[in-house]
Length: 467
Image (spheres, helix red, strand yellow):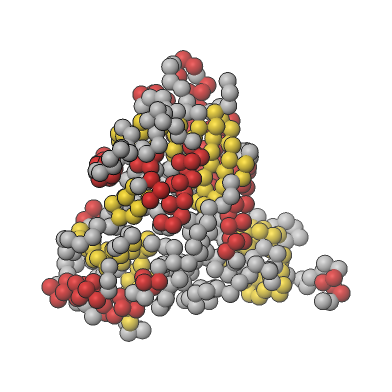
């Protein structure tokens, strides 16, 4: 080590990376305080970078060289990962040790809660972690016939590009799906519809691998025969066709096993369609549901509301513990699907029937205090919103807390478990619940649903403060 380095002096132009931002970019500060975001750099590293975008208070740059490397930097497992031209953009953090990824996501959650919501949880929950590879049971592969290469490409987009990456393997999808990438390229390349099939959506169930082929023109009889032959050759593959929007999806051939996943801790099986929203990572989802139900602390005889209930991923497990459950979603069509899943799981339960469970449709982004009162008092809430969060719901709770006349006989839930896919909107809603709604944030932690990406899934617990 040179005398300059021993003294803490680095050559001009070197940047010290202090942290990672929510997009997995390294964050450095120049001597004048200006922030520089460096794609591909890790905390603790000294790097040089090429600035390609400048604003008054920040700059964006690409990594040129790492001069002093972080101990957490690892060799990426996937040969298609990197900063080079043509690199796959499906992952952003394969160069960072998996354990360090979780720690950084926990820091992102805590920073958001404090800086955006001025909320600090009483307890930081242990992170929910699972397999780092082969975990992604849902994906959307782009399909392109590239005449210059004389090939069909099936995969994710290149980093910061609309082009499809030339990938031949993928380590975040299950191994059997990775093994299908090259056969799928050959299949599309042999079809009459080679130019009019822009996408293949993947949805794995416990026993079925569903592939949804988006096709812009009707498929020929020959192409349909090729799809059937492909399914016959690759065990468990089931083709679905999508000529237009998601509502047009249909199974190529009826019969065969149904697409579903199990929540064995609760004796629940969840049938779903390949274009339905289900969690990408089924291993983590099982642990997530179990922890959410345990943290909620539901007792027999209690009434529970599951807001943003989807197909019933939390509602039905809660119905094995509670006295009564109400699941609320944003559309009648989704509520109808939830009722189907409820009926499916009520069959053959013997001496362990599900609690009385109902579903209702509401515009959850325009919730009012009056509607909240109309839906009745519940002992506990499970809230699992999309990225936009549950602002209207939290605001209605805050309004009722501050207006006794408006509240009437309605009482707030004594505990709320909030599952979030966006730490910023969670922090915003947490601020409302804590500072205006009469709650404290008793616990929060991350759920590593998407290893090797910058996505932060999290869970927070809110307990009603004594009056």
